[in-house]
Each structure stands twice: as structure tokens, then as C-alpha cells.
Image 1 (cartoon, one colour):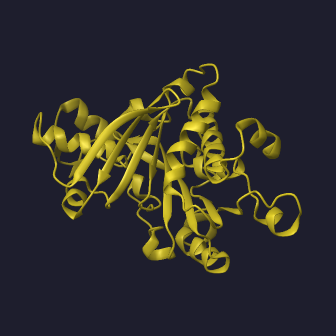
Image 2: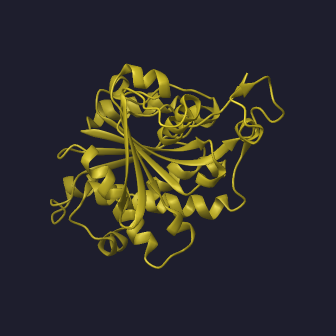
Amino acid sequence: MAQRRTDLAREAHGLWRERAGAGARLAGVRSHTGREQGFETHTVEVLDERGARELGKPPGRYVTLELDGLLRREEGAFSRAATALAALLRPMVPERGEALVVGLGNRAITPDLVGPLAVEHTLVTRHLVERLEGFGHLRPVAALAAGVLATTGVESAAMVQAVCARLRPACVIAVDALASRSVERLCRTVQLADTGIVPGSGVGNHRMALSRETLGVPVLAVGVPTVVEAATLALDLLGREDGAQLPGDGLFVTPREVDSRVADLARVIGYGVSLALNPELSVEELTMLLE
């Protein structure tokens, strides 16, 4: 049976409201909107198991940051976007301790490239803090582009588990591509969550989860919707909840400009994560250290 697929808690909440009718409220779920650095934000908090069942999302906090201004190349949009992402992520990050940033995805597939590219724009400091003077004010940060099972022969989560066992970080920040219900949100929305992540879930290729249960430390997820399933588009156009196998089921659609959009968002995420972990740095100082 075809059904609407989305990794975004905001969209899952919207789908529930469509089914329940106007004005309906879901017990166990709380939501609100806001603004950060001029960008719109939407927060969905799944409070208990009832809310988790209805939305299909684990209990936790999900924040989406709408970056339309970045797509329009507004003046100062990159700096504001990175600062906004850092401000939203910072409360989820433990105050002290080493952080491990993990970029999930297949480098050979552009819509799946956001994780590995974000790692390239992340300030890695672990070696500097440990070995050189003058960097003691920075938080130790390590990074890993885990690859995918098809190219490495090793589950991403197993690789991250091994690194965590060696480094014993205070938290893991996992960056991955997601699937959206709406083409309007592709490559212009970032979702932050404190619930961990299941690599490949957006395209129905569920792998071992990266979570506190599997890694033993808090796992924060940063995701960008880069694809929408064709069957989801068809269901929306037909105005149906679900149906028999539809033409295009299993086919995924991505924007024509996916190369440039993924590159832009990966840079925003890398900078945003780095600023969240080292809030004393400015965007300008971070640029000097990275470039």
C-alpha cells in the first residue's frame, strides 16, 4: 500500500491534523512556532508514547528551521542561517565534553551527500586541543564521514559504535539527508532532533539506529530533506490517504539544482554545528580557521 512518507516531525503532525480534522489536538504532542535570526522555526515536542505512536516519531524534541532566505541568496543569509542553527542546536548539546560529528550518506549520490559535505565544513579540534598550546579554549571535536554499507561493507552505526567506544564522546551529532512530504521543503528546511536517527529511513532502507540506546551517549540529529517519494506526491495530488500500489512507488524526486543546494546547506550545517559547540567563535573567526 502506498502511503505518505516523511522524516519531518512537523509534516507528520500536519498529516495527523488533516486526518483528525480542523481544530483537533493530539494529546502527548505539543507544538509552537517562532523566529530565529529572521528565519521561521517550528517545534514539535513528542511527550509520551501515545504521541509517538500517532506521529511515528520517538519521544523527544524536533525543531525545523525554514531557510527560504538562504535559497533566495538574501544578503547576510548564510551568516544568519549558521547562527540560527547554532542557537537552536546549542540547548540540545551537553555543556561539556568531547563531541563526535558524524556525516551519514553516500558520496556517489548527490541528494545523499549533505552529511559527508557537512563534515568538511566542521571545525575539528580534538587533535589541536590535545597536542598544541593556544587551543585550550576550544571544545574538542572529532568528525567521521561514515560511508554506507554498499561502499564500505560495514554498517554506519557499527562504525560509529567503534569510534565512540574509543573516544567516549559526551555526545554524537549525526548529519543526514531526509525525505519530505512536500517539494516546497526540499533543500530549504533543516530539522534538529534530540532523538537520534535511523540511517536510510527516508528512502525505506532502514539500518541500525544511532541513538543513546545503541551508542551509550546522547545522539542529536541534523537532517535536510533532499528527496520526496513520487507516490507521496501522487497521493497529495489525488487527495487520498493511501491506496494500492501507485506508479512511481519507490521512485524519489529531487530538485534540479540539488548540487548547489546541498553544497550550500552542508556549509550552513557545518558552520552551525561548529558554532553550537564553540559559541565563543564568530562566523568570521570560524571562516579563518576552516579556510
